[in-house]
Every structure is written in structure tokens, then in C-alpha cells.
Length: 69
Length: 536
Image 1 (cartoon, rainbow over the protein chains, first blue to last red):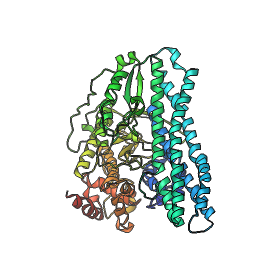
Image 2: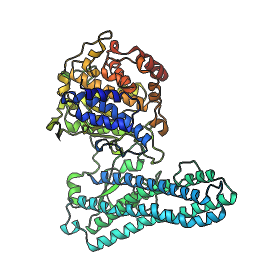
Image 3: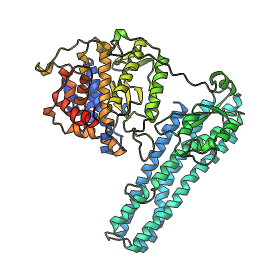
């Protein structure tokens, strides 16, 4: 497991994310080796589920990357 | 983008803009009152009188300015209409805009702007009057602010509907009214007399709209049909009011040739009957089906599922609730996957993925199994499938819509070449597979495991949810989060991610006869919070 993937995994373990966590996971998803892309696809699944609460908390979705809007 | 989809997006965008501008208006008024009272606990009558000028200015600078911007956006409606209109078999001269058309467009815009104006005048009076009455009564500043918030954005409960509710309805309906008026004007100009009632069905679509959707009528027939009464009907021209308030349906002009060739009337769409393959079917037992068959079958299933009254309605928009990003109301009742996807990314270069007939059979079969699970747990079945993959997500679930990434959710995808795990409790935890589908040899079982996992999300998102407030914070999710991390065990690394993934990974194993790999703590939770509650 690469250190980038480990970091993304650890951040994903937060039940409630912050915008900073969200942006970091997205960034890490592009830095991990190709061999971990499938597993990253699962962490992105978990991230998707957390977006509504994050938007609620922030009051807007301006922070979201285009592909998540 | 199809015209219908464009109109829906425009309505949504206009509603958001008008709501935001009213929040701004409210903030400005409260701030101004606060400044004028200079810390006093109540507003004097003189301040209340003087404030009227400020109120008018604030309304001009916020609400009226936004309304003007929205109406200017109607040029995009014209553009979308003309693109679609240009594809009809009509003389070329009607396919472009004339000077008279431009004058008509301006006139129609003016009419719609008048609707916004009327509301501004009405609420200028109401807000002024509210401030004045409060001043006379010597109402404390904080109470006055509450009253104003109730009146403008409705954030504080009060009797009667706030300005925001009316304004967002006007923003929504004006888009469709303008579209309807321009459609009928331009169609008549081109001599077209037949129109198709188009759009999508959602959970609370009016029966009137359901009956007439995708039917083609002459103008005379439309005017006759629209004389009847139905719940939610709005009085006015059928081309403008369509099904009624907040109706998302629209009229599409139909040229005769097109009508005759491709729109045979009164021929119901035949929903294919696909014999159910019962039992835990394996991939090599699948009987392939075609793409068209799958779409027709699932669209029918999802349309019915989307009408399930257990799906919560958003009390503000009066539409089916939608909180997940990337999810659209248009996804409800639909199967939005394509046969082939060509992708081009910096990371992977060009890639092409294509479903096989066996993949379609697999999707159909597992959706039937998910419907069975929904029945078993007495919750609404999923109401749509959409394609995902822009961000490489494997699959996802939200608002009752299942997202599938064609790259991974195929019988012959790369993930299905991975070795099957023999891990069991007691073995080294670090040797667990990443996700539970790796406990299965068969490619269909791997698809099944992933979709059952997604159904687990559907369950914790929808079960016990009775209203929009609960929809945003479901009971099961609150219960899950209370189980401490150290108490949760899972047979996959992914189940360590958080309580929801722990729930879903175990849910898949539990329902796929791998109970030896299910966390006993999960079984306890499931029995206490779901099975026993539901009496299963």
C-alpha cells in the first residue's frame, strides 16, 4: 500500500469529513499508483456518501470538484 | 443537452438564485435596522417610516436585479428550442428567428418579469407594514428580526408563506411558461398543429401528466382535454400551465411526417417479459438479453419504484427529495447506462468498455434480487441506475439511484481476474481482501456482492425515514455511528473505513451465505435494529 493510499484511507475513516479532507482525498486519488486505482474507486465510493452532510455543514457546494457536482 | 434536461436545470438554477438573493435581501434589511436603532431594543415609528425608502432600494438591488438576470436567461430557452425545432421537417424559413420573433420574445419576457415585479411590490408593502406595526407595538428588536425572517426567507416559522416560497415558484414556473408560450407561437407560425406532451415522471407526478405523457395531440384536442379538472391544475392556457404549478412537462411540436413515421398512436410500449432465473445463478448460467430489452424492462420497474410513496418529498420544492450530488430528479425512474463508453484520461489514455448481453442479464437479475431484498425489509426499491466513473468510483448509491462504473461492473472486468481470498477470522488481519467480493470465485457473485453492498447503503439511507429532516440524517446512520470503531470487525479492509462501509460489507456477506465471515457485532446490530424492528 502506497503512503498516499494509506493517507487517503486514514482520512476516509473520519465519520464526518471537512472540506480540507475532501480536497486532500481527491488530490491523493490522482497521486496513487495505477495499481491501487481500483481500491481508490472504493474510497471514492465512501467519499460520495459523505458529500451531502459536508455540503450541509458548509452551506454550499462551491468546494466540490466539477466531477462531484 | 436535450431541451427537457436544459429546462429542468434552468428551473433549478433560477430557484437557487432567487432564494440566495432573498437571503441577501433579508441580511441587508436586518443589518440596516440594526444600524438605525443604534443598539436600542426597539424600533421607533420614525425609523420604521424612513426605512421604507431603504427597503425599496434593497429590493431593487437584490431581488429585482436577480429577476432581471433570470429573465435575460430566457434567450437560452429560445436557443434550445430553435435547435430542436430546426431538426423538424418544416420549411427552412421557419428555422431562424425573424424581427417579429425578437419583438415577441421581448414581449413574453416582459410578461414574465411582471410576475416577479408584482411580488416585489406586494412584499415591499408587507415588510414595511410589518416593521411599522412592530414599531408601534414596541416589539423587541430580536422579535422583529424573527418576524422579518419568517416573512422573507421563511427560516423562522410564521403564519402564511414567505416571499421565498412564492418567488421560487415564480422562478420555476416562469421558465416553463415562457418556453410554452414561445413553443406554441413558433409552431403556429410554421403551421404545426400537433404537439407531444414530453418530460419525465417522478414520484409525485400528477395522474393527468402520467396519462398524457408522450401522447401526441392536435391543438384542438389539447384545449378540449385541458378543460377537465385535476388536482394541482393551474388555470390558464394549456401550453403555458401544462399540468399545473411546478409541472416539469413541456410541449414539443411535431411535424406530420415525423408524427406518422415514428409516433404511432395508442400503441403502448411493450415491456418485455424476461423469465426469472431463480436461485443463486452463476455467470455461466446467465441467459443473455439485449440492451433495448434491459432498458425497457428496467425503465418500467424503476418508473413504478419511483412512484413509491415511501420516497420522501422535499417540502420546499414539492419534488422527490434529492440530496446526493450528481443525482438529478431526471434519474428517477430511468436506466441511464450506455452500451459502450469511450474514455480518454491523462491517467489511462484511451479506453473503451462495452457491456455484453450477459452483463445486461446480470444487471437485470441482480436488480430483481435487490427488489426482493427491498420487499423483505419493507423499504422502497431502488428507482434508477446511472453510469458513473468520471472520478473512477466503482459504484455508488444515493437517493435510491444506483451508480455503476462500466469499467468494473462487468463480468469480464479486470477485477474479476483477481484471486479468490480464503481469509477467515483468526487469520492475519492485514491479509484480508480489500473488499468482500473477493471471497467469491464467480464473476456474477462478484457483481452481486458489490450491488448488495450498494443496497446496504440504500437501506441505511432510506429505512425508517419518514420526512425530509430524517432523510438528511437517517436513524440507522445515527445508530451506526454509535458503535465504537474497536467493536467493529470486518472480513475486508474496506469494512474498516467507517461504520457505513462496515455495515454494507457485512450486509453483502450475510445475504450471500458467508455468515462465517460476518462480524457477530454486526449480526447483533442487524437483529436489534432491523430484523426485530421489522418483525422479519
